[in-house]
Length: 285
Image (cartoon, rainbow, N blue to C red; front, side, top):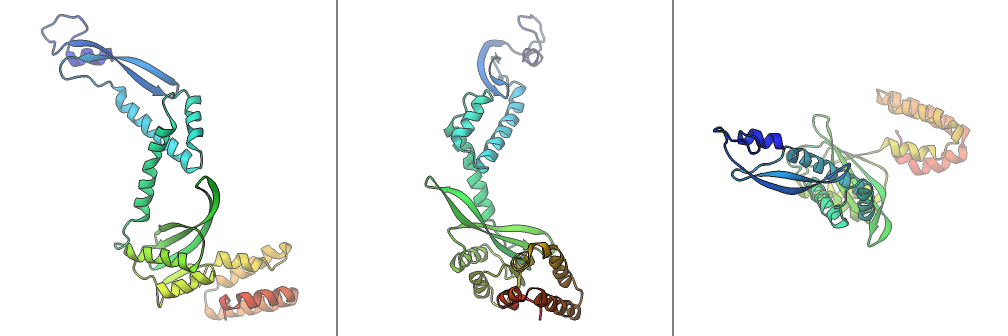
């Protein structure tokens, strides 16, 4: 800092020279919180024009990194009290719970901006719809909620997460709210929607997007089918079923499925009967 001030003024401290452009005016203390602890620096003052130390820009970068760390810890479920204790253990004395809360306020703004962004400028011919169940803190209690997710594929084949909606439950009414929000944001009617076989979801897809095609998600379908197959046969059965899905022609699909259905009925007749009644509407015919 002394060298910077000398260069700015064109003269060293107490040096008499015709090239001097200004004068010093003592020092001011400045607190700096670093990863090594808290330091107090005596920053030179200049009478005219002022002086900004070189480390201020670097400190801003460090502060930005600290904010990112605090926000990431908050997202991962670490409480503000624990974050405060962690900061103290690292030697940062002035990071209080109120400051942690202030840092995390920006997260809500970013999330709301992401969730409410306009969709009118992009066409998504294909949508994937699913629900995740997450544990969240509500009024001091940990509860399980459904987070409805919609992934869209645009005309260039690029995937975007276009909706993340927390709901108290996964029901027809909650999916109705989800689809209405998407339409209010400018989503055009897709050509195909892929999801699991949740009855409320399927009904709401038909009501919200009349004429759209629906396809059952292969991942969910595979999980449901394999629940009826003995564990030791899972891998072999899954490989045959995947081969049916990957067939290039409708005729080959029907042929492979006919063989699969026959073998399945012979090997596990009771399981075939239970699963067939439940899943037959989603199998190839």
